[in-house]
Image: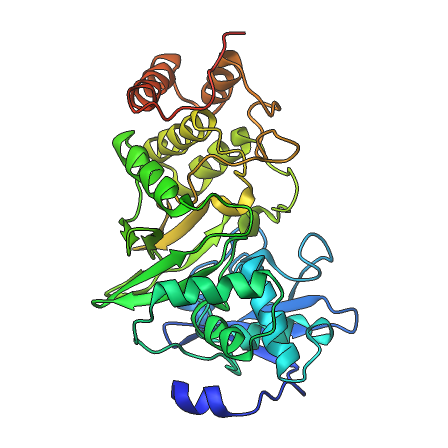
Amino acid sequence: MRNSENKENEEIEMSNISIIEVFMSDRRVGRIALTPEALCGFEYDPDWIQTGFSISPFYLPLKSGLLMAKQDPFRGNFGVFDDSLPDGWGNLLLDRYLQEKGIDPYKLNISERLSLIGSTGRGALEYRPDKSIAADDKLHDFDHLANEAAKILESKDSNDSVDLLYKYGGSSGGARPKVFAKIDGREWLVKFKATNDPSNVGEIEYNYSILAKECGIRMPETRLFQGRYFAVERFDRTPQGKTHTISAAGLLHADYRIPSLDYSILLKLTLNLTKDMEQVAEMFRLMVFNILISNRDDHAKNFSFQWINGTWKLSPAYDLLPSSGFNGYHTTTINGKGEPTLNNIITIASEAGMSKQHATQILEEVSEKCTRAKMYRFVIKAG
């Protein structure tokens, strides 16, 4: 692996990347090649087939031979690899960064974009050739980074800020500006204010993260840096290495930009992957919390699963704060409803194999905690 200084100073050469090698923990998983129609073809490495696992059970089963992606919903990519690519803020940074290097970002194909992610992406997958820029462990002033992010959002020219922010957050997802930071040997995702956010949005998200934990929802550690910047410890990084992580969008090839899922599907997906009713109840508890606090931006990328010790597990929860969804309704519907009733909630719990008593108990527990904290936004009505 080239060091970060050399990689940062060299010219970006994107031509002639026809094949991408996919690695995990320095083991080759397989390779990606593009068809003339810009569709991804993927083939597992024979050694990985013998001793590895399916990195995407529904669309990349562990078997020999070429597996082909479809055009939709990821423009010819497989969902698990699309998860590695930036979206929202990360895409904005990447496009601005490439333009300043004299590269037209709109001409890059999937292979070239994956090579830019290289070893810096979310989860455990790495891509070679690796054209990424590895950030150092230097701790930057978050006030400065937040101000520079605001300049990018306001479309003000600032070469230094584009380079700096791309280095520390170019592979990130989501709409809000953010950077990755390593502090005291632990890796954090630190969020900044977006244009339309309230000035105390960091404090708001931090308070809801604490409430979520009190409601029994499994969360990563969260902090408020410098009294205003919400930070969450990365759950795809551990002292033992990187953890393979895939979103519900990536697993199901669901378009996260539009309503494409129902919580009934998420509950069944959880049972199908984990074979564990306790984790189904965990997903149900998260759904109830999202409903009560009116977190309606609950799209398909805001739920993830991880491969840990040879089994699939529901990831810790993230992105939990009040937000508007698609046309003001939940992006992930509840029994087909964007604004659910009690009957809708109990119905999908029953369909997932939960007893009415267990579902009601979770509903009462979360409601009581949210009511006591005076942090609920939605009253669940009977019907």
